[in-house]
Length: 406
Image (tube, rainbow, N blue to C red; front, side):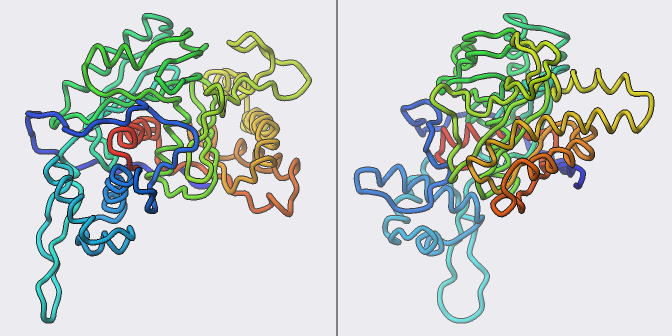
């Protein structure tokens, strides 16, 4: 197991007054839906064509960087005429720019390269998953952090916690130096597709209309998603996760994000991945914030695990506590791995807690409880995206909603 890599600090961004707003319109659904692939990768039926092909061109440039119009046509399977028309429209919207001519030897006119104007817009991303602070950042379209801010949580719940979200968002919006594409929020708990936090016991939220409140306050597009779902979006876009996977997010609580066939899975009641409130074992356990005893959160959530570790008097006791938590995580995950035949599981949270005895106990338990011929090569690893994974994933959610690519 390797430690989480630190993200490099981005180069300073030259000031640019946000003098205009994007001219594109978000999808009418206002959010995600189960079964929607994150990345368009092929042509579709004529009645779906223009919007899809527009996203396809943007996705090709976003992932591949500078290319000629002919390169984009070859990569997408679209005709050169179609690509040229789409690029002209996207340039008029300020989303694509010409980058100069390709340097080549030999006869013929060199091709003009195009790319997404990656500095044209910025995104504000918030991470509400930690138990001690709310964190946020201003990010560019590539998910690089440009500015940071945080606000102490200090046990706030209910309306007080929601007010702190609003205050943090206001601070970061004020720090932006380019037009904002939107505001993305990764929240613990069950979040529906309209950005209502249906249940977040650790924050005392029930049917909290977070997305609507922030949209009314700031008059910009807002996307609120579950924090683990945000993290899995970041892993997909920036962490190289291309296969079916589950990401376990450990913080104030414990949740999971699922990516199957290139699509995020939300569930019929938006609670897919809510493994934190699954009771693990039949031996009782501590009382959980949801009212049950022995939930996975009581073993694995950061404040619970820190409290247990504080009682350890030596390294052996510390390793035993971490291994116990890993074993309980493995018990919770084994049926999921068996049912979905996942290729990998990614852990996101405090490295000092997750990377080591806890992760080792998790994979040992998984392999002991599933069929080796199908799951013996299962990979369990730490994310390489570090503590910014949720706010970067919240930015991906905005990208996907507003521009149709990730």
